[in-house]
Image (tube, rainbow, N blue to C red; front, side, top):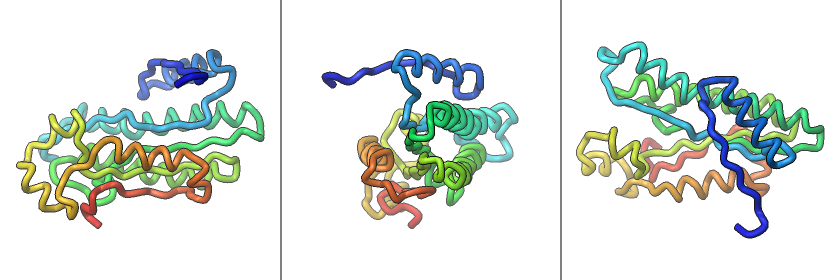
Length: 200
């Protein structure tokens, strides 16, 4: 968009040094720390709990939960160090199955449940410092990740969704944009379901 500056930086959300380097690079290039954050890095693998090995479990926790923690911590620290007048907003991408559980998704659901709890804790701590933290709980969304991992017949899944279809990525993005904006200025620690009515 005209007149706006865009900076791309790479990071491994599992590694503190990588996250800190990326945040520092963004701040150096923009002259100030970012004020808006969306934690959306995620992985998932569908396996029965009896077949879930330690590496698979740990990857879910490291990327989905620890990554959210490390990026949020680094973001908040940078913003607060910039001055007491700095305001910010964080949106974490969790999942409806972090609230409900889901057969054969133990690592994924546990990590996303952790994101929900982490969101509420960070929200409670940071609200008084003018940083609002909320999260979004998507249901079945048409993405490359769900296309490769959801093996059940689509018709069976659709029967569980009152709207009768999967969501579109932009339908989640609209909610994220709202939570980042001042239009949601009185929302803190909220977990907004974007599920087409699944598990309501």
